[in-house]
Length: 156
Length: 156
DNA sequence: AACGCAATCAGGAATGGTTCCGAATTAATG
DNA sequence: CATTAATTCGGAACCATTCCTGATTGCGTT
Image 1 (cartoon, rainbow over the protein chains, first blue to last red):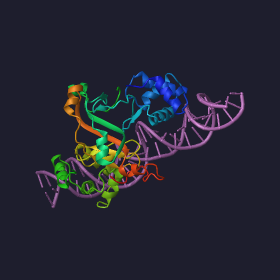
Image 2: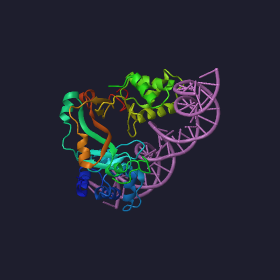
Image 3: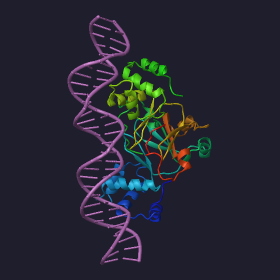
Image 4: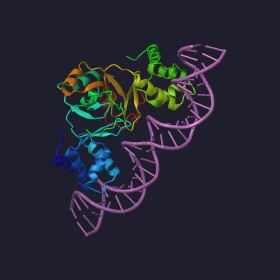
């Protein structure tokens, strides 16, 4: 589940980070759930509605700070915009090759991390699991007019 | 297991792609396994030893072509260089936060893809699974002076 | 051997998301 | 409130990758 606004503010205080108006505006965007996997530009434009002077660099700085403190989790892509994972529960992201939609899927079983450590000596601190393919909407009419197009991610 | 040189050449022929000297040089780099997860610049510099006039744009074009035809699989990163997955068996990449090493791990059990399709209607065509953490070398002396590597990935 | 088309080259410019910089502003503290 | 450090801002810089252009090479086929 997504964190509460109060929880996030609490966490910032604990870490000695200031509660500023730009940050509050960004937090609102994150918790309001207009987008489960917002990118920097989405956050920037939305947060600007509340804090009109917000700059893009501050948006990036804030996202990085939040990522560093486990408030969001950065999903990195090349070519495409990076995304923020707002729901931090363990899950798999299903990413549509066609429309770019990202769907959260909570599987029943998962690879046991202690097995990995036992087998390889590798200590896991984080993970990233993504399945690519076609979402229900896109697989319904896979080869209609506009083929694999621009991979643009308009919605979560 | 990594594909054989012959297998790759065979596949190129099937797809109607020409067998050229630059491509053979690049294939050699891939199958010679000096690097299990080489980036474009590594491939470029290595392949140049065999085909001296190779250009960087051709290197990128070739990698993209190979990726498109399933001969390698592109691992996309942001900020860092992208990497080529040469071993296409289903596995998890263990990526060290410190030295950047990438270790292939073949788990015993995996999430069943048909379950995913059944539960979400999402048709899976590919996947990406990465665990981040500390490799054996780096977790041994996690907080010693020098982070043995510049976070750059010199070896697989 | 010769043709046609794909691939290569150069290499510089463009791209675009992200980061970096210096200066101005603001939050937290006592 | 005065101080100090953190934060913010705008714009410039970054950088791996892509995209040119047009000339040349050389693979695969006839």
